[in-house]
Image 1: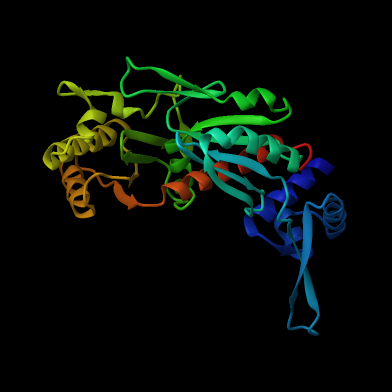
Image 2 (image 1 turned 180 degrees about the vertical axis):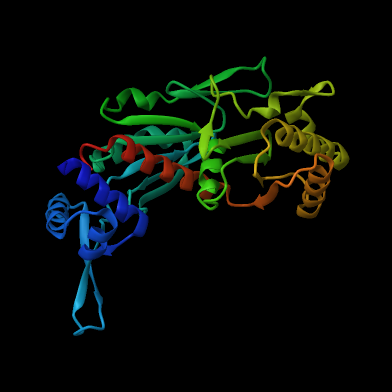
Length: 316
């Protein structure tokens, strides 16, 4: 019961950022005595901190409680072949470290960060490909299958969970947090290649082998879609983007499609989106975004929160 109450209190503080003992008691159903005991235990572990806020009655500060800025940190790696971003973020949402570095520097930096933040129990890695154990698959077509392996993971303690996640899947999950009423969402990128992150019933869908969403590898009129996207002909690019939108709309019927990194002008993609919706009798909302990097971090943070809520972190 003690562990259950502790998790209940933490979950409440995650949802509201800070609260008084009375507010915690009212919302969680715990008695004031239990709340006081649990808060003290969490403060002893430096998981919770206090803050004062003036109240009108008597002018006395009402003591409020919040997760500490260093509570339950996780390590996020936004991987790129040339440069990568490494972030240590706490469960309270505060960035403790953020570094942009050459990818060949990753191993040394991560080993040092794991020594510095011994409480880390989760590493999340966003990758531009299909996740496999300790790495990912990538290539410009199905015949060109290459594997990238994260060698540094062999030096990571077995007590630390590692999740390798497709970058667009994280983007989809990150965007989902902005739309609490949306159940079905597809995140589409039309950058150097075409890929999607798929949300069904507010859950990330990756498929049996995590291939779900790799639309760029589909054949379209004699070439894979990714090749068509790199053409200099705007009309050909527009045609393939229209095809992808129709395909996604008819196969998945999402409430919302988020489009990022599109190789068409904003006006052109809006016109294509409107035409697609009319043609297939769709009422889905199509939104353009330029926040891919922030979406990936937002998705990684939400994954970390879910990870904690499902099994907790022993040293958190």
